[in-house]
Amino acid sequence: MAKFVFGMNVSLDGYVDHDKFAPDAVLFRHWIEAVSGLAGSLYGRRLYEIMRYWEEDDPAWSADEREFAAAWRNQPKWVVSRSLQSVGPNATLITSDFEAAIRELKARQSGEIDIGGPVLAGYLTELGLIDEYRLYVHPCVLGGGAPFFTGPRPPLRLMSHDLIGDSAIRLTYVPA
Image 1 (tube, rainbow, N blue to C red):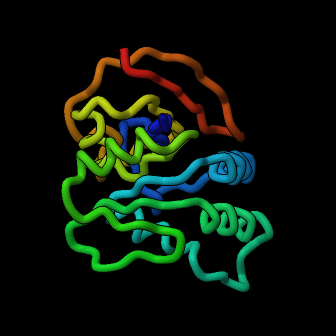
Image 2 (spheres, rainbow, N blue to C red):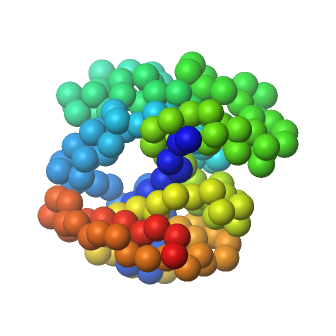
Image 3 (cartoon, helix red, strand yellow):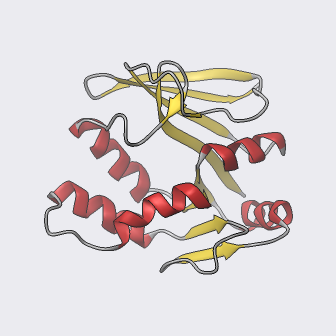
């Protein structure tokens, strides 16, 4: 059975926005290693469309960016969407009966599967399918945007906390 993990960079006031803050070199290296070790990623449409940036090489990328792109491309991806008609390489589109398809994915896969996107994570939280939450808290206040928790706030138990890089703190929680 797969372990579903929802982890994203988040502001002090609980919002996620990849355009407002970026990881430092140490945290980016952490993300490369994390993505390299995944059994795959399960995305909502919005975040999948953002992540497709990594499908095509850019000559301006650093060596770390190329390494991240290669790790991301190599992992299987499942995309939950009612509106997409197709997905890129190494991706499977889930267009109907989301709950059954996701439960089957969790049951038949092994290893860690990253849950990509707060809306999808909120849906999976309501279904009781998230095994672990990882908040990479950055010292900034956004004042609005997409919240990390989009639905009911699950009761959580803190498992660990780690400083990663110069300013991000990873808080790891499991459902209580």
